[in-house]
Length: 221
Image 1 (cartoon, helix red, strand yellow):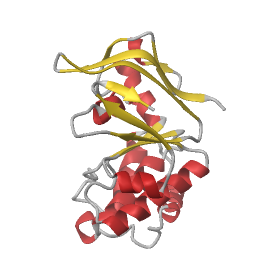
Image 2 (cartoon, rainbow, N blue to C red; image 1 turned 45 degrees about the vertical axis):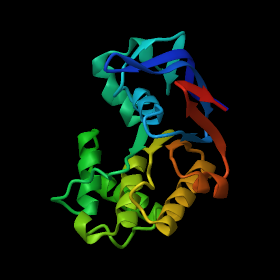
Image 3 (cartoon, helix red, strand yellow; image 1 turned 30 degrees about the vertical axis):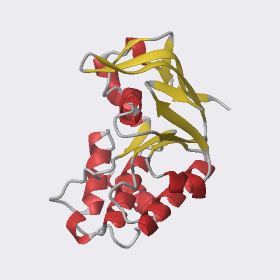
């Protein structure tokens, strides 16, 4: 299996403050990994560093999907992000357009030009997340769980090898949260590498997978 993420002795800083230090972390193709820890322990900072939203200042090696994050040019960041899908806790859907139009918007923004191919891909990902008949709805017409499914569909659009899910169940009721985590595990079984940050240890227990803890500015496995 190929290595998707390879961090060796990496320090992560935010606002000139060290959040995590001496980070060693590798993730293989198709692997599911939880990041757990208290609020402020560095889970989100670690994930944001993976899509170059938090810059790395020091480390022996930091590669994600073949990109060297220690020497990443600004113009290459969009290309890195197109190879991954990002799932946010607060959805970040465009509220003035339908779920389907949210998906179309992303494909057009990432270079898709064929209307037929755009429609076919949107239909595929909506079916994949169980939302095939609700693409016409506006975000405010959808439940939290349905919105998160649309967000996951959006993350899948460009056939990513890696999905980063930052507290994807944080705004959902327990039952809906279970459905979302089950969906993410099914995607992992299909070959997607997934990193999921969560503070819900019951989910980790009920859907077991590799678990990394952020403790005292270090990662523990």
